[in-house]
Amino acid sequence: MTLYICFWLAVFGGCIGSFLNVVIYRLPRRSFLSKARSFCPSCGATLRWRDLIPVVSWLMLRGRCRVCRAKISPRYPLTELFCAALAPLCFLRFGFSWMALITFGVVTVLMAVTQIDFATMEIPNGLVAALVPFAAGAVWAVPGVPLWERLAGFFAVSLPMLLLALAVNGAFGGGDIKLMAVCGFLLGYKMTLLGFFIALLAGGGAAVFLLLTKRKTRGASIPFGPALCLGVAAALFFGGELLSLYMRLYR
Ligand SMILES: [Zn+2]
Image (cartoon, rainbow, N blue to C red):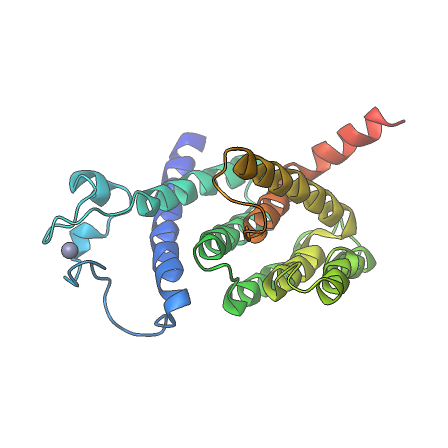
């Protein structure tokens, strides 16, 4: 029975992933609300329904456009695969609960933030706004965190980031700050600090790696948003365990 539910959740997740690809492609190009059907970015051919089945279509077409044979980036099926795995994982972790739905929704949006931030070095306001209903819903759906802890979470990371951005021009983007405000309210201050700590480790590690392998030179800008997204997602999924592990180590 669990397997059956997981299968359909994966199908559902794959469809959401397919929609997410459209968001990731269109949002930075400001053509999100256009009614145009999905098309090949190379030759402009309109995609038919059988080109739009998550993951399956890409495999059937062997990663090329049906009309012009241009390569289709594996980023598209990988995004769909990510969401197809995420939906059953949320269910297995949190059961049939609001927490599962909120986690799925938030991590999906964070996936879009990550890809757009990598591509454009900017986090669209629309995506931060898309997190607000989940953060507001968490107030009654996840009652373990008192409201004052959420309000503290709203400022815990965003305020220091804001002050640092004002002191050192370009230290953080406005998108990073708004993202951590909304996610801070969602998580409460404890998990927010934990998530930010993970983000610093991941972002710092990635920066050192890029510098050592000379893929980036000193002074080149590296987006911090993806690291923040990773930290928030990790805190959502494993926050409780990580925090109690930490408590046990230092008592
Ligand atoms: Zn084409």
